[in-house]
Amino acid sequence: MHSEQLRRIIEARTGRAETIAEAAARRIRPKSLTGPSGKLMIIAADHPARGALRVGDRPMAMADRTDLLDRIVLALSRPGVDGVLGTADIVEDLLLLGALDGKVVIGSMNRGGLAGTAFEVDDRFTGYRADAIAAMGYEGGKMLMRIDPDDPATVSTVESCAHAVTELARHRRIAIVEPFLCHRGGGRLRTDLSADAMVRAVTVAAGLGSTSAYTWLKIPVVDQMERVAAATTLPALILGGEVSADPDGAFDGWRKALELPTVCGLVVGRALLYPPDGDVAAAVDTAVGLL
Image (cartoon, rainbow, N blue to C red; front, side, top):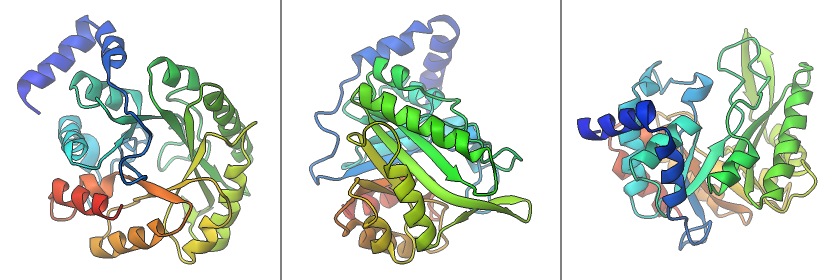
């Protein structure tokens, strides 16, 4: 990021906060939710708000905000990238940088389950609300729904997600639900990525709210992926997950998943923004090519 761009962001935030809402009002909205391929390619950038800054063996890789913004802006500039998923701080920096014209914007809604905490499964809504997403003219909201059968805090998260799905639908905004079954083991919250667990999580997520008309799912690639995709008729987006030591293997998994009829695109963050070889543009172009 050029020093002049950073200066403009700081000036807006310290003396002209209304500039952010004005930039949102001026933003050119995309003509459709999906690109020419009929699928959706979204860059995910909401990890820092949950305290999840690790990329591979670098525990603080995402801690430098200007570096992160550089990577996101580069990714958004590549042909075939449809938009971004982020919390208000990141989305508003991108608005001030003029990087969101024609792009799909998905607001991240519940970031309260901070990584590595005793209350991690309690994914409270600390980010965007449905009315704010609609007021800013964004295309939808995303929520994380982790189900721990042994933790009573789970039920409040499920209830909050159901309410958010209903409210987003009332504003005719899409709700992207990211469901997982998980459990505590060795002092950590661990995600169950078996096919049976993902099928259960998907069926619970699909039934949230008073209508599913605007609901999409965000799911990982797992073994027996066809069973997971067949558990609902809702459109699904494949998430990127951790940076892999075998990026070619990750790309191949995404490609196979995209062949399933209900899989309608990708939502990828660290795997594209911090590729092992450092070439963000090449990683993004490869992912776009899968569509």
